[in-house]
Length: 285
Image (tube, rainbow, N blue to C red; front, side, top):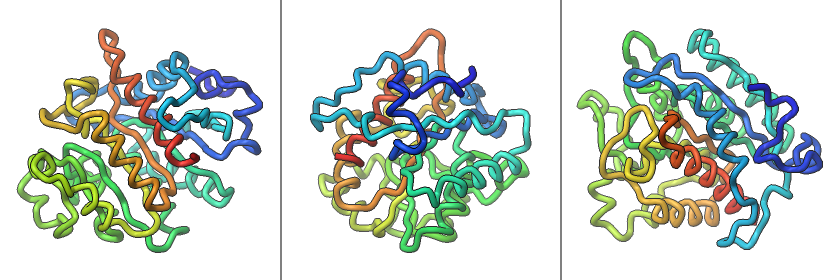
């Protein structure tokens, strides 16, 4: 699909030019490192197709955030290149837009895309922390011979920044040594702790990048992802938390990854795009 002449959600071109847009949306259709079911390289196209059917008025915030401008970048990679090259392209693209004073957003693709964007953001922002929403810790230093696998997507960030991990319910025992003590919120603990949102936000620094794996949600509402895990977050619980984060912290950007489209199930595509639009609404209200 050629996005050069398209706009996000079919918005009018006057709201989609680079100069007039507060937000930049960068699709990264890459899934070379996926280890179970492949197909998340099709996630950005499915996301953009679902956006065409979304109402652009947000009831909760009483806003039409698209009028703040959303510039859609043509897809920057394809899955034929090496993961190292992909990460470099994401890094360079992030750097390109970083000093243009835009709010940077990404749609993947597998979780390895986050490595490049976080590298670039860390070069600009001091007092940076990463809010990692996922069923998995993704803290392996190396997986299947590569430090750039999706299972390693948060390891590099964990060595540089506070990494607050939410919704975790699956991990390898070797990852335990790399967890930042006190910064992980396992799903089984969240379930019994009404104060988890307050405690998690307290752990975040002033500037926050949010990385959202679709599998942080329960598969009953988001089944179309590469490595689904039972017992995830519900829709309104997640939104309540995100709204608090945006209110209390300076969110500098976010990504949504691991959407793996299923031709027989479109609700996850729509969940991803609705989440994207909600987060923009929280950012700009």
